[in-house]
Length: 167
Length: 155
Image (cartoon, rainbow over all chains, first blue to last red; front, side, top):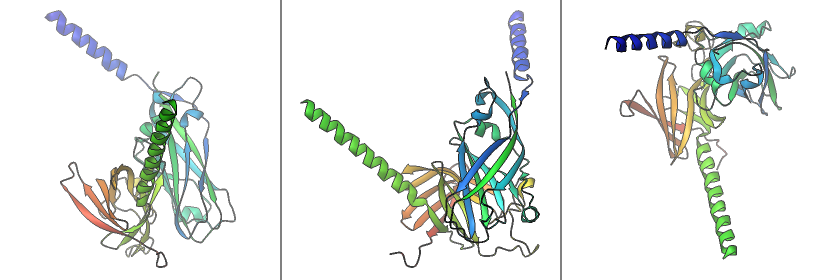
């Protein structure tokens, strides 16, 4: 009985130490995604989307299922069609088939006016691990147009990820 | 006999295909612009990667009387998202079509108190929805009736 408790305690300690192992950061390039809103687009709220698989930017041998910590360091937006009316607000969201869609950040009108398209990021980002581990991801950009635009509109998002995996 | 078998397989395949197309058409009946019973907002529901989402596209009072600026999601529980524009905000998320005019597994966000509820949507007729928001059990919730915005020249 004495040995039984000792053995159980030892197993528990090993499990706890194994579970608390350090996650290790991995280096990836900035991911550039081109979202498209299919025109014609009318004044008001419109949406541009693109589906992607984060696996494509991970180093060889690393699988997205190994991700343990995910944060977005920055998102930089840029408008592809420069003649299109400039939207006065942007909201950036991420979704995947088996998770809930979440807001990742937004752009204020004041930033847009000074041509600063760096997204203000959400503090809460814990949901990102589950989204990136899913079979595919969807980037959604909602934007508010101040005029009509009789063509498609493309917005490029350059996402700088901070990723950690457990070996 | 072989000819009969081939014919039977062809008709079963055709039946399955047409029922799948019919299901997808029924699911997309949710797409459109809808107005809740309080008529304070209009919500456009669209389909993204197989699920249904609704964003606010019109507000009866778009300007915040305190700041004099466009209203933002000031009740968002995430402090860093309180300045997100309310016009464009996605208040319906992740609805999946179940068949029989019902979409479930989604959530509805109430910008007036910053709370998110589980939700099911039932299509009562082509232009009327019952949207139920609840916490935990479906029994403990509230249902609102939303009306589709129909173009005047549409027959």
